[in-house]
Length: 326
DNA sequence: GAGATTTGACCCAA
DNA sequence: TTGGGTCAAATCTC
Image (tube, rainbow, N blue to C red; front, side, top):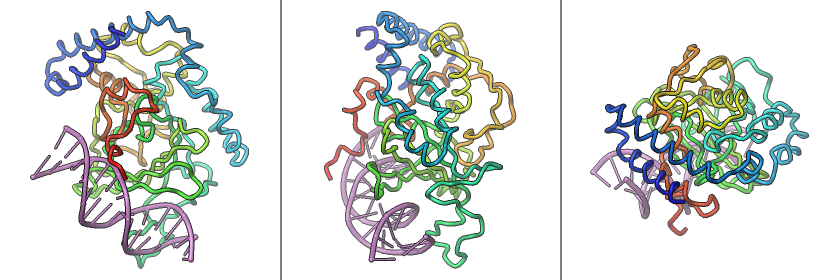
């Protein structure tokens, strides 16, 4: 416990001084090394086997059970298969697993099968041309993803996807247990960025969030740009390796070079219909600052990015904005 | 004080 | 008429 608390303390210090340390890579490197060592030592002391780790880290409800009914109804076999071969069967760091995305695209951006989604497909040019205000059509294509909710912290908050989102509404949805939250790009006004997303917890498996992206980013400004690790990359990591991320950090403490094979052609890379940052590059190097951000900036959006969530049971944590009584 | 969130009210497509 | 999507004032957080 002392080691964990000490590691959290170091992480907080790093978080508070991260901006200043960006120009001092040596200090940054040493700090991160210290944090990694601390947490690694604490983890080793736990003597947790992969099996135990897996059971304790996730909901008792297995994904294939949770989505069995949906799978039968929609025939979304790919979705189920992706879940089945995802991190649920592999011992991995929860912080990384959390970012792993399983894509279920109702209306893929390009060249996929037609959607059978209940929300309907947006047909370009189909909408009324008379109503410009609050028009729900002609907003571009939709892309729906199912991602794992935050294991630590507020599960309602979608994991960081590299863009800055501002919540502008929340609504109870008929027939759904959980409300739907509405987000739009923080830079909507400045850049007239039309990107929006809706986030809702999956009814029969609250550990997952349904995230629907609408519109494309035109601002190309991210909240924590360098920290954005493409979801496909994380999936590649989870599929290619069975080791945890911690040894990787230990072995490559100065920088972590990651292969991006396949990135750019697959689905679910650009959060909202293709981001200009997602080029055809085949490799990229993420520095310590990025990795630190990826490690600790797990709560997503603009709220809840603090270490407190790491210290709270998921059930007891509440979003900042929900403290007030209604 | 600026920016983010909440939430009741309003708009509008189905 | 209904319910999803959005607005905007009030409130909160930093």
